[in-house]
Structures are given as C-alpha cells and as structure tokens.
Image 1 (cartoon, rainbow over the protein chains, first blue to last red):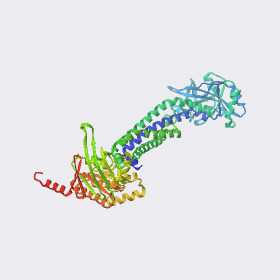
Image 2 (cartoon, chains in turn orange, purple):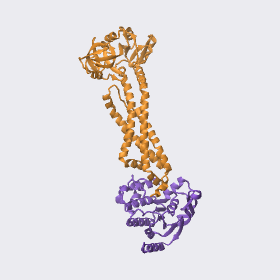
Image 3 (cartoon, one colour):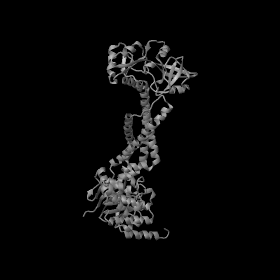
Image 4 (cartoon, rainbow over the protein chains, first blue to last red):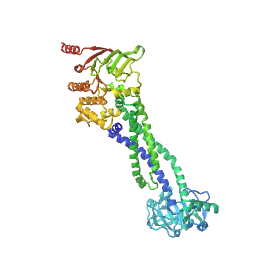
Amino acid sequence: MFLSARTLLYDRLRLAISVGGMAFAVVLVLLLRGIMDGTVEKSTTYIDNVGADVFVAREGVKNMALSVSAVPEELVSELAALPGVTQASGVVRVTVTVSEGDRRQPGDLVGYEPGSGLGGPWKVTAGQPPASAGEAALDSVLASRLHVGVGDRVAIGGRDFVITGLTGDTTSIAGKLVFITLADAQILLQSPNVVSFVLLKIANPADAPSVAESILAEFDDTQALTRAEISGNDRDMLGELFLAPINVMSTIGFMVGLAVIALTMYTVTSERLRDFGVLKAIGAPQGFLLRTVMSQATVLGVAGFTVGLVAAILVGPVVVRFVPDIGVKVNWEPSVVTLAAVVGMSLLGAVVPVMRIIRVDPLLVFRR
Amino acid sequence: MSSPLVVHDVSKSFGSGDSTVRAVDRVSFQVEEGEVVVIIGPSGCGKTTLLSMLGCLLRPTSGEISILGEEVTGLSERRRARFRLRHIGFVFQSFNLISALNATENVEIALNLAGVAGTAARRRVSGLFDLLELTPRATMRPNDMSGGEQQRLAIARALANRPDIILADEPTASLDSHAGRVVMELMQSAVRAGETKSLIVVTHDMRILDVANRVLAMEDGVVREVDAATIRQAQANQAGAPGL
C-alpha cells in the first residue's frame, strides 16, 4: 500500500491536478443532482408550509403546480363540517404578471381568506400580510426584482395593489408567490364563488388519509389528497422534467472524471513502468502489481470524491444566493451512489494501465 | 553438498530461419557455495542473456539450469517469480531503485513481497544499512544519493531476503573506480558473511577480477574458464604497449 501512496505523492502537483479534475467532475454531478433535489423540494414550499393537512381540488387534479382547478366556494363550508376537520379555507391559485412601471415579473398568485388563518404567508419578513381589498404581500425576491417595497404600488393582473408586506421562503422555480385576499383574486379571475383548492386542517394530522378517503367517497367531482401526496406528486412531476437534462449533464461529468482518472493512471503507470518491471524482476507477483495500480486509482477516486463533495456542499448556498429561484440540496443517497460510481470509474480508468503492467517485460531491468 | 548453480548445455537463440541469432551457445558450468564467479566478455557476446536465464527471467532454447537442486527452466512464470523472490538477488548497472520510495522503503518492499513486515523488516533493513554503511542515508530518496550509495542500496535490496545467489550485471559500470571497488568488496564480504551463497558478476570491468574465485570468458555466446592472473597480465601488457 505504501508503494501506491508514495507513487501518488511523488509528484504532488500532478496529484493536486488529478484530484482537482476528479473533484470538478464530482461537483458537477453532485451539484446538478443537488440543484434538482433542492429545486424540486423548494417548488412545494407552499404546500409544505401553508399548514393544511388535506388539499381538495377538482376531480382528476393531483398537482398544485402546472394545474388548473376550480371548485364551488360552498364546498368550503361543507368540508368544514366533516368530522375531524378543524379548519377549512378556500384559495385561488393562478399564474399572473406583476408589474411596476416598465418592470414585469411572473408571479404565482394566491388568493386567500385573511381571517381564516389558513392559506396565507407563513413567513413575513417586512410589513403585514394583506388584510383587505387592494392589498398584497409579495415574495421578497420578486419585490427586489421589481425594485419595490412595503408601501409601494404594483399592478397584479392589470389591477392596482399596495404592498403591505414582503414574504420569505416563497421563491421557487415554479414561481414567486404573491398573496392577496380571496375576494380580490375572484374579481381578477371574474369568477365569484369559485376557488382553486380547499385547504383543510385536521385535528389529528395522522387521520389525514382517512379524511381524504371519506371526501372522495362522499363528494362527487372532487379530488382529495394529503399534504404528503400532493407534495410528492408535484415533486415527481417537476423531477421528471429535470431528470433528462440532469442525467445528460451527470453523464458528461462522469465522462470527464473517467478521462481524468484514466489519463492520470496512464501517465503515472507509464512513468513508473520501469519500477513495475524491476518489481517483476525481483519476484513481485502479478497480483501485487495489479493491487498497487487498483489501490492508486481507488485512492485517487475517493480523494477526488471527498474534495468534490465538500466543494458541492460549500458552493450550494453561493449558487442559491445568486439564483434564488432554485434550491441546492446535496442528499446522502445520491452522494453514496456517486461515491460507488466514482470508485467503479476509478477501477475502469485503471484497466489500460493494468494491461500495460501485465505486458511489461522484466528484462527491461537490464536496459541501460 | 550439491552446487548452488549448475548450468548444463544451455543455448538461447533469437529470431527464426535465416535470421536466427544464437546468443548463448551450449554453455555449461557450475558455481560452488562461497564462490564469486566473474563472467567477462565484450559487449554483445551474450553475457546479459546468460545472466537473464540464470535469473529465471528468460527461458533457454535448450539445456537445463538447476538452482539449489531445482531445475528452473521448466517452471511456470508464476513459480519462477516466486523462486526469484526467495532465492535470487539482483544488482543492476543502472541500480533500478524506485525513486518514489526512500532508501529504507526500497529495501522494505523486497522484504514485504517475501512476507517479512513490521519490526522484523525494519530490523533487517537496519542490519543491512549498518553492513553497507547506509544508515545516515536511510530516509533519503535514491535521486538524492551518490552513484556509489545507490549501488550499495541496490545491494541491500538484493540481500534483503538472504538470497542463495546474487546476480550482478555490470555493477561497477556507472561508478568511479573508488566507488566500484567499495561495491565489489561489500558484495564479496556479503558472500563471506554468509548473507548469500554465491555471487555471479557479469562485467567488462577488469578491476573486478581481483575479487573473483573463478573467471569465465564469454565470446560469441560460448563460455570458457580462464585464469584471472593471465587475463590481468594480458591487460597490463596491452595497456603498456606503444601506440595504445
């Protein structure tokens, strides 16, 4: 083992370049996967934080993102009367354009009943949530892009609103949330007495699945999903949208890593071919020589992975700072898979050097 | 007691048909325990080919080589490697030390390959370094050592597993006369000290003849035994001849 370590450490600059190259490939893979996981997780921020245990929509609607749902508002009071339901509130959710002067940004509008305590913002970073007609709370990232703050006015869907508050943790790739009253939202949509979703709070959240089942059984034309279900559905759908490009980029990352390892191992072995010939001449078994190369490749791969993992964890928050729409979450599961792939890749990269060592003629020791 | 090395009617040819070159031609000799045998001859006469066959690195085209009573020409590659590790030590002209390892590690690796590790290996290295006056160089890399020191280190590696035979290929060719003499004296004393049974040196350096018990002269692949004193006299006459 010390031969492997010493040979790698002999040229420290090359070792640093090799580990750096490998780490770059690992960062690419982990960061892409982390962006996918983080962004998908962030995309369900409304569902996860709004406080509802069950979401009721029009029949067939199983997602909140990229879906259209409309149910009669009277359903809210009917659902509120169900056993186990402690609170019910209707919300309208639709994509709108928010503008201030020449600046325009897309927003994800949420119309909710301010008095209900359900459906509105959960983290107000400045000012107050909207309480009456003509008031709005904007996601803080959206507000900064529009260069507006509390007290300023913006146009939402063509109507004038005053900003009463700014909200945090409400930015995602699916949109930046804009909160107004339910009545204002219904006016904007010209759909009085209609809501997109009914949010239910259950006395015992563990009963949410059975409440959802009873709603499905009792109410025609509705879809009832627990928070975990609708959140999972949204994440799966967005994940699938991400998956193909992420896989392509990950494959490119792996190819880069493989090339780095193969090149490094080939160079190290070529330079040390005479050493291997000497060891063969003095009687080193083939297995020892192969183990030496394999362990070098593995050490190189694991070192590259470790540096890459740490770099990905450190770079993640920096990426989010510059691009708040996305999230970065380096999970342990893809990390373990990446580590296994890196080790496999390292061993694959050692194949050509191994072939050279098998063929090396120990008689080269007599060459001057 | 049987001879550590018996070479019987060994030939080695390269190429085929009209282009066949017979590098070693029906060579027979034996080496006794405690002997230092020097094989001399001009470049290209087949010395290194013969040494490669004695070291189980090359199979003869015909003939037999017995080392410690074991016929080695028919052994598989794997068994020949194991045989080399246990019974043969090599010293090369170009030292062939591993530059990534320090002096101690260069010797330890030979011991480790033979299954000697830890304290036993360190003790053996220490003993060899005392014998070969390398102790102050124990942690140095080969590239930071002089040619003479590198060759002494190569001898330490060759002696590490107490081989029965040491085969040395031009061990003084890369050294100045003083360093060359020191190296040869150390190898000779290793034989006397029982660190190895026999020493076979291939060279065209006539200064080495001083340490030889027997001298074999090789020319065009053929070996004949010669008297060292006669060779030295011939060398001296040649060196003193007018116009030379």
